[in-house]
Amino acid sequence: MKTLVVVSHPNIEKSDTQQFLKASAVSLSQVVWHHLDANLPFDVAAEQQMIQAADRIVFQFPLYWYMAPASLHQWLTEVWVKQFVYDAHGGLLKGKSLGLVVSFSQPESAYQLGGQVGFSLSQFLAPYAALAEKTGLQLLTPLAIARFANQNDSDHQQLLIRYQQYLTLQHPDNFEAQAQWFINRLQEDPKTTMLADQLASQTDEIDRLRLTLHELKAGESE
Amino acid sequence: MKTLVVVSHPNIEKSDTQQFLKASAVSLSQVVWHHLDANLPFDVAAEQQMIQAADRIVFQFPLYWYMAPASLHQWLTEVWVKQFVYDAHGGLLKGKSLGLVVSFSQPESAYQLGGQVGFSLSQFLAPYAALAEKTGLQLLTPLAIARFANQNDSDHQQLLIRYQQYLTLQHPDNFEAQAQWFINRLQEDPKTTMLADQLASQTDEIDRLRLTLHELKAGESE
Image: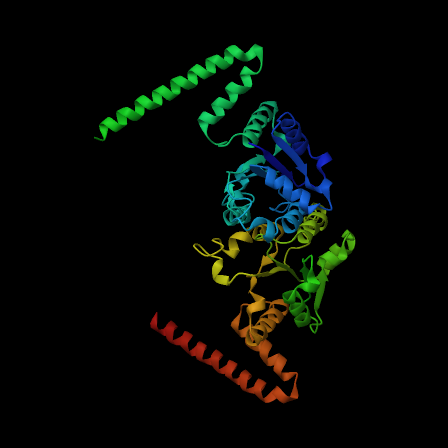
């Protein structure tokens, strides 16, 4: 699976969050990191080719006044034109997936009724849900990054894993896929191969237990 | 009341909607028409001065992928900075009102559950509601302009009136304020003074009838 990460940030060198995410993505061979603000003015044909080559497109941006920065909007206006998005074959985006990696400086709990912000992240991202539906893109649940600067090393380690999974897994929210991802990563390194084997056999055991549970339930309902 | 109309449109000369709105606003002495895309790069201090001088700020834009074009986002990022929006006196925007004039090419009925778009305009505009709440701006109900190109002369005439009221009335949704606006406009022209007098006396009559009704109801509930 090839992933295009479309980053919108007017001041990316000063963003610890974006630098961290960039470092997390650099080792992934199937991931293209594409910073919009560094590619202005847009070469529309080249941009469209990058989109066509990707199976997953990820919009990655900080929230400024609860919305994406200007470059993402400019890119959508200039690149996602009707002729491209709705082509003769029923849409060039159909079947691809759309991810959203959104960072903000408030705690995640601020984004709800009665919270500091008072609206949910889903409310603010409604236009992207409409865009996905309109173009046949399958929308992933957003990856929200709250208060990166206040996170500790353990939080950062978890974010790195979640982010890499978000960019590379067909179903990043799926538990089995996440476990398999760990096994694959651990097996790459001789030092952790044993750990990987242990994890793999545990994963198999979980599968077996689930199957047994399923059969018991099926028996009950007969 | 002074109104600043902040227009975001990358191709305004070709937009019939924006040209029509501009022509509708030009005669209003208390209204400043400010096209963002023509003022790039922004002179931040000058932009902030314009905002401070206004009692009402209107964001006016077409929906591109259900969001505003890039220039409004760039302007918000560069001009609506913390130091300006949350000053030492508790916010320079507090007490002003915020209007939204939003145009789109679908019929208004598309913006609902099950419609062609599937989301409401209020859902897409949630970030502006959050922004208004955060900065102490009083949000007006948006003025939606659907399918301008398909509207007839009578629709355009009505839009002109609604738009002028939206820019100039303290409470543009208020029935009495709308009636008074008509009376004022008609009285400016000798040919329509009689019509204005007629309208004024009808408005008074409506007030009297409402008062009577109110008194009757009060009597009932005693």
